[in-house]
Image (tube, rainbow, N blue to C red; front, side, top):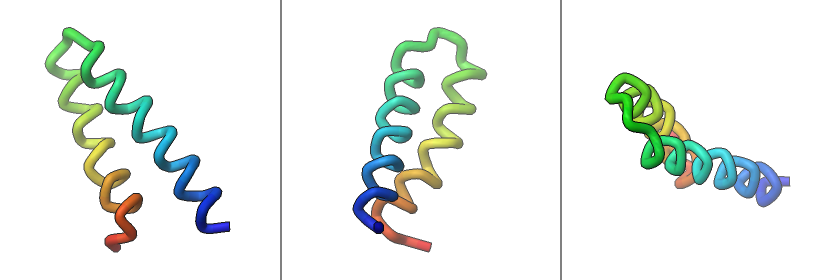
Length: 47
């Protein structure tokens, strides 16, 4: 079950990073970066 959760989390993280790099608006990039930080922490199982 944990592997399924981590797989879904990795997919959402990859899409977030992709949208961060594809965006030209600084406000959207800042929002994406704020989303990426907790996703990375959860991926590495840091609470």
